[in-house]
Image (cartoon, rainbow, N blue to C red):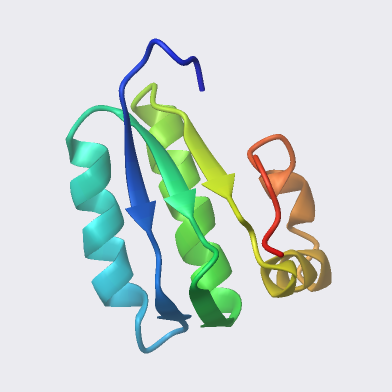
Length: 101
């Protein structure tokens, strides 16, 4: 994400599971609607399931279609494990700015 482009940061907190996906979907769509690049701070997110991974991938795809970068910061290792198990880890590659401690 170029430093000279405005970006919206969304701090994702709490579960990213099937039950919470609709709430986070709306929040991410609203952030993308601002027209800026998007940074997802995932340090406080969890627990995760496949629906959470799908939500992140959908946000990345929506951003790409709109010409907006979507970057992932402080990514929990559990998200990477879910992505690897689903053979979707390649879709996250190149979008991760940092891992959670």
